[in-house]
Length: 203
Image (cartoon, rainbow, N blue to C red):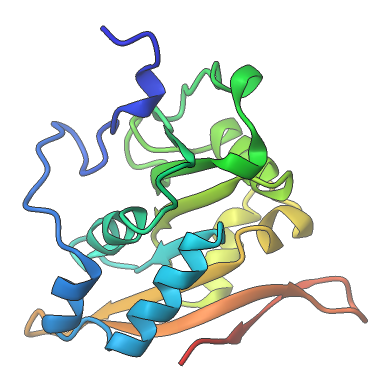
């Protein structure tokens, strides 16, 4: 067993972990999930250490697939930490550099113990606010539902925690199974109210 277990994908595709054939951003462009300009914009954002949350309401919409494609764009010199579920021990923190570490979260939800929820999710969000890059997925189909999940009593994320997540990519799926990026949103803080707001960005 590795003495650095956090470097191995942990139930990224759900238990039992048996990944399908991972797709690249180029593959997703070819399938019409997003266009080439959006793909390059997101890839550039990730390469420069920006955080991304991939969100969709329904399972099977392609959250993990897009997140995995974005992980391939992470600077290869960065350390990667695969969060090991809601009981993540964070034993890698003492030896990590926030500016050179990417935290990978298969899903922020309470659906399964292998997903990140409660104190685990709260801590990951706080680490994003402290400079760590985060790539994660969650179930939400609108800014309102996403904020409601992150600000739920179980997580209790602060405005600063949420803003640190930076970019949210919303995915949608039609009745016939066609998947597509429906929006790319940026978190910011309203200077008047101090509340988290989201605005459309990207090409």
